[in-house]
Image 1: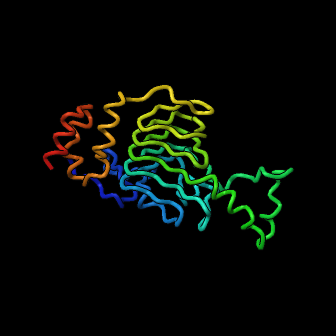
Image 2 (image 1 turned 120 degrees about the vertical axis):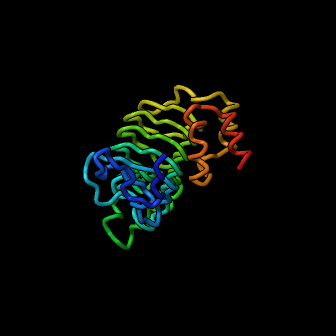
Image 3 (image 1 turned 45 degrees about the horizontal axis):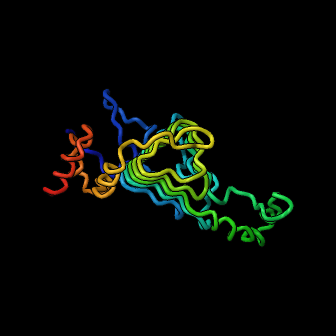
Length: 218
């Protein structure tokens, strides 16, 4: 196998003609935002030119906001996915949802505690988010989960769950519970990349026994 691109490679896909595919980025190289944490090799693909990837993915997340966006290693994020973080929400504890105080800089912090209570968005390692999916504040998407195109995810999705629709619902779990438990123990996404590539035949074949053997021989 050709040498795998480094985790800080901005455009990791080289097309057959030798040109760089600029529509796909490793997010760790493309995002510099104090409220966004990105794992190695997590990527995003977009059909349009993007100047600011943090703003494209999480348009309401401002530096210093009370919430975070955490994207795990090897996450795969398709065109049009948006994370609707807590600062996007309007207060609903009173008689109006109109955000009067944001129009006075001295009072903008008034909504901070309510936003903080909604929590972070966490995307687990090796999760795949399909075309134009929406992920709402406070949601955790488990490792290896699959989110269908245009799904609206308003509640947590378990590891290796497949979720579709609006609101998104889990239609199946990709593997039996015992296999999911073994995969979570192995956590191959935390291995050094050379070790992952050596185990790639087992990963691609769905051979968890071989993957465990690879883990034990390291």
